[in-house]
Image (cartoon, one colour):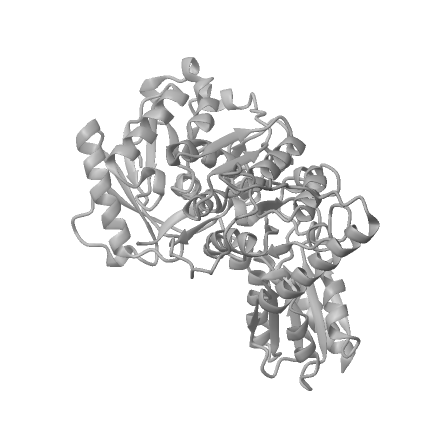
Length: 355
Length: 225
């Protein structure tokens, strides 16, 4: 298939349909509106169902229901709407149901702004809802990567019976880029023999539930969940390493910010300063080992996390680096975007101080 | 472009590159010394709108008319009454950049009885690489929906088939094929073929309409210094 020009949000919706998503429940919010708009147009043509719920809370609970019945289901929203969905996400994680949640992040807190941001990192990776749970969080840096990751997200969700979040900043949703829809590698997926699809000759009902009233049973449930999360950490970590060889400073950046950082790296190179980048593609599980390995490289003097937030991922970078090298932060929040020039200045300031 | 009517309404699917065309067209008018104004009627897209070019336009003496709520990077459909200025003050050569779908075109529809048809061209910018306008049937359907929303008739087609930084001559020619099909079906002329300045010299001789070389102004943050 030849490349076409797609707007990020439309492409995400089309990718979901290509991955077999049949149900979408959502509620409008900028800057992700083209996702429900596209789903409303296309899902009925595919024999699926689009439903604009009365609220985000209703939408995520419809996702819970459809996922429990074994369907491929997705919802999308932007920051304030994702906050509203947190209770449902915790229930879905607790009941071990597969679904895909797209967050096209905008400036916060509160209503914030409609411009791009990355300030939902904590919420996505540290459990925005209650209880001990984990969710794989995929962070695309281009529309093409968004298309690939959304398709894979459905498989990952089914493989682990777990919600998967695709998190892009507003730019991922709003920008136009050339895209090619290619089939993603097939995973061996388990039967959904737990789904509530009727007895069909079986004696026992399948029950979808996250209530374990006995403490010992709930403890066991948590132990089982964390055994599953450990497996995810073992197999699902993904990141891109760029220009690390001989780098004096290593940037940490994800999503579109990583592309701005790459631009800054080229500018630094022209000034004779070698810089590299570690770009987490999974924000959870976090590529700790990649950072630790870089921290052990003698050429690396410092790390600089660049984010469209007041400093969130930087904490995971610090934990990963284990104090071996200093970790710095530079960011813009509320919808403002760091410029390559400012990133270059920041890096030079740090290296100047380290010498 | 001197043959175009005083008010140029630029429509097309979002992603067709209509804003990039509108911005370039406006700057060319200003450079030729005309009293130029651009109206950003895009209430559909929250990002990448022509009003973001306001400081550059002001430097070139172009009047920018957008939201009545100044300085707001919002998505509120707050149209400025200033729009009437360019409709009534005939000293202006004006460009109206319209939102990229039927809902966006509706913002223009509200002015339909104030727009003098004899003074007005409505261009439909077509990008054959956009999935919703990739073939004749879909392109015409889209064009008609924009006519419906805006209550205006398209007067000419513009081939702006591109793939952002990956555009090849073949893309432009693919767009020309599509424009020719739409042109035949609807009896509309192809007014311009838009091409990035770096590619203009490589175009073949059989290009429809005037060649309109452009610079890219609507840059993504990693395309800037």
